[in-house]
Length: 170
Picture 1: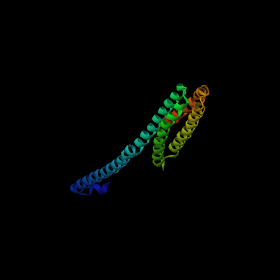
Picture 2 (picture 1 turned 45 degrees about the vertical axis):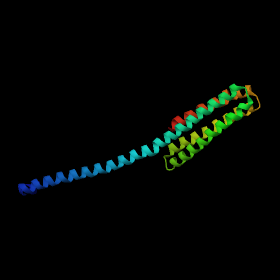
Picture 3 (picture 1 turned 30 degrees about the vertical axis):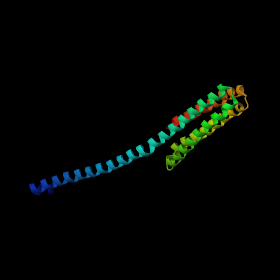
Picture 4 (picture 1 turned 90 degrees about the horizontal axis):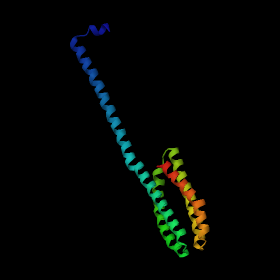
């Protein structure tokens, strides 16, 4: 401290301003780095996370539409209606396959918890499809009462679990 008293006032003033300039430069660099990190986070949210939610919503909408189609089948009491409904179900299946392929690609490198939730969605989707097929099978042979029971006992719980998995994933 005594050494600083032996230095001229002009030099002390210059050292003070130099220190302020150094601190300001460090703060500016930190701001640039943080802005870059913020831009990367924003890009990821817009390009990846929003895309995942949009695709998950498309899958959920298709599942809802599939439930409506199956309900129409079991209410129709017309075995020929099953074939017409199957074409609509196939269209939804193809859309879902495309959405799931894109989701698969977006899930690469994601945290383990997020991947686990996505795997749960896929498992619940399979159970939903199995339940839907279990309803359609007796309807094809005009066993509509059996189809209604399977709808109530098997398909409704499967779709509820599927929706829960989708909600947890989103």
